[in-house]
Length: 494
Image 1 (cartoon, rainbow, N blue to C red):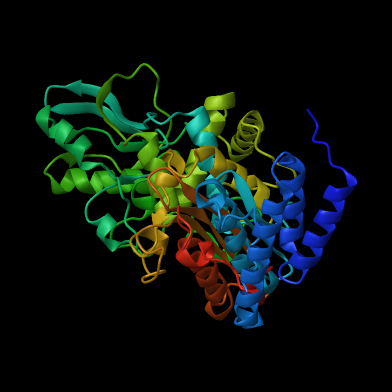
Image 2 (cartoon, helix red, strand yellow):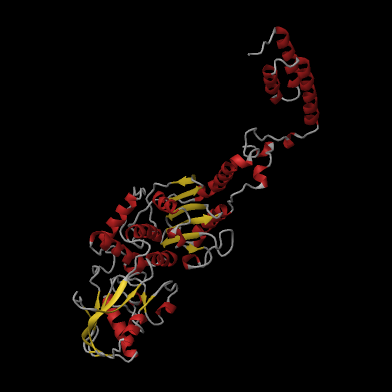
């Protein structure tokens, strides 16, 4: 039943309101509501309670400096940490990141996601040069089209007759980008993490008792086309940063004791394999050459690469350009039957669209990211990383801060050392960093940042931005700090 409040009651409430007003405005509402709800309670008792409260509040305020007054709202994460701590942690992170966003060059983008929330989204739809961050797209498509267990095969085919190979011995390339021989891996700044050792083929010949090849060693690269470089690629990186490319590539096309790579990597492979055979006492009568083996020739020996998940990890950790380009051609061959760069790009775009990745503004010219005509948005990169969740096979293949790959000499100290996994990207006027920073067993911050513009690839420009960003992200945790949950003073109030 609704309380019956008569005129005498109202006069009493008025007097009480006047008394309490001098003590604390916030108590007016409390006293009135209490009187209305508890109409059956004697009002005299309410007057006494209100009078005592007002006296205490007046006394306390008289002895407290205004700077010490606590102003935390009644509904606040500081009062209910178990319910709202996530919101205050994310809001505090957002405030920390705002100065970093203001420092970004005009042609840049940054996006940060935490616990399903976008904390920062700056220019996320702006197409920018991604440099080697483009390899993230190739990796995502390779997982989808080729699968994590996919392996490359390299075969020796020919006619074996007792201890002799009658005629030519063909080495048929299967697109394996990690074929290595001898001491070549030790000469690399970042040697292959999972090399496919050609010596296993030599061992198979020795085990079969082969001591002579009456013909030549012939390199077969027919699995892919013979486009050695992306046509628009700058001359300064051809043969040094990448290529020449082909389906048969031993030691990245390098010939032992030679400073110059031949234009045809299949010929380089035939030369190297001939040398290795001769060193092991197997006679080779003819000179190395190239060609296409007959499909009728029997397989004498075969070696397989590590699974695709490891090949992708090598590509991402070391930012291996040859691996990225050969993967792109294999993706094209698997999807359309054509082992070409163009077919691979079309397949990557289709795979990303099927995965509901936003590819608006995407312009893809190669797989390595070396070509300056490539364009990607932070939105595209972030969508791929979010689908991985921070703990999947894709980001597991990223370099670890201060530990290996392209991050081995970066972030050597700080909150993300040994923790952050990220893919770097570098061209003149381009710096990119996309990755994950775990802060619990099943939660991670996911971010992408692309910097474009004159001078951004200078350490004095990009490193302070990278360090500020990663240190801010590395300080995030699953629990709010004591300072975040303590009552606010007037000076700290939002």
